[in-house]
Image 1 (tube, rainbow, N blue to C red):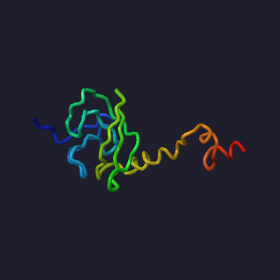
Image 2: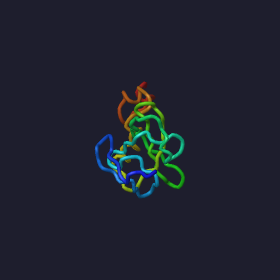
Image 3: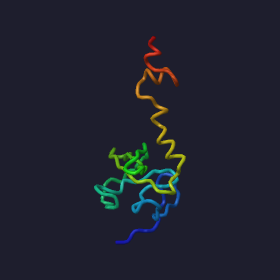
Image 4: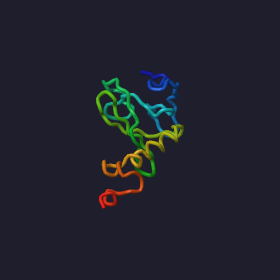
Length: 123
């Protein structure tokens, strides 16, 4: 079975080449970083029965400084980790990495604003 050498992103509409520098199983758009729920168990198996969109929610670092995208399916909620590619949108990757800094974990810290801790706010 052969696969086309490109696909159109279901989120932003960009034509995306399957030939991605840095990964052998591209399934996300380098422009918006969205993906489709394609794989079930291993990268490239293309056996998922869920047709949902995969939203990029964060990045993580694995192994020798290898950036990985974390996607969450908008239909079934499954999380998947995918390698980034050399042509991925660097600005969006940085925005995903910085997102936790913009959203502190507790309501007291969010209400206090930047530079304040909950102890300073209480006292």
